[in-house]
Amino acid sequence: MYEVIRILGLIAQILFLVYFSILQLSFAYSGLIAVQYLRRMLRQGGKQTLEYQLRHNFVIPISILVPAYNEEATIVTSLHSFLSLHYPDFEIVAINDGSSDKTIDIIIEEFDLIPTTHYGRSFTKTAKVVEVYRSLRYPNLTVIDKENGGKADALNVGLAYARKSIFTAVDADSLLDADALLRVTRRFKEDDDMVAIGGTIRVLNNATLEAGKVTALANPKKWIERFQVIEYIRAFYIGRASLSHFNMQLIISGAFGIFKRDPVIEVGGYRSDTVGEDMELV
Image (spheres, helix red, strand yellow):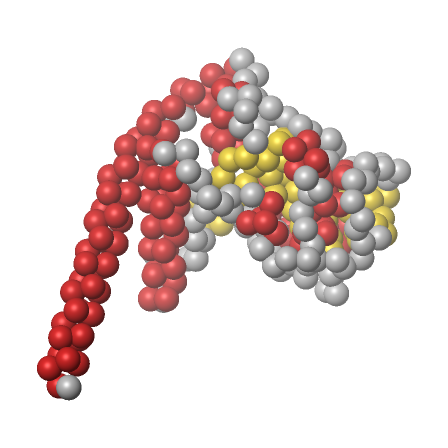
């Protein structure tokens, strides 16, 4: 009996060794592929390429959907960040999803909002829209105040009021790099069959912010946050980059994903009866 247990234990050890060896080799291979892919993307999306896009109007109008629920602490910084993006034709549609704090009051005061008669094109049932506002200071900012229905419901309302052919859905506590839209939207110009693109997400812990912009990055002080940085690097700069090289992308992050508007509406938008609405949509 002892000999049988010893042999089974040895077999289990060998199986685990083989499994982890294959796993680590696959990570190493993915890393090599990711380096090649990222180098190619850097060459194609360099500063000269971005300037060429602006000079020759090689851009697509885009709507930025910002669902917010109880985001009074970060919403102003985030909206200022989005408004300062280096992009010639975009609109921001912020959706207050029935917040119980002062989110909508803070937005109204900060951005000089007034009620407007702008009507959306409803394509699915959503929670009731209470009021729609436009900004006296920023003509490309629309704010929708609605009853609570969840993030997916808020995004569907935003889609109904969006007026551009492509859109991105970003979290209200997130920031976008100034050139982020220029770097990703050009792919829609290059490939008519493209329906969705995912951007890279990074951790902002211990970063220095000024007027909604990141001015300096530093390593987080806590070890748990440092491990989070490593995980994001592995997930986006290795995992998703290598999958993109083989045209095998499995998921577009809900924190920064760009989609063609019409195909999303054709499939019914975001489902509100699921937790991972971004994964379900993809």
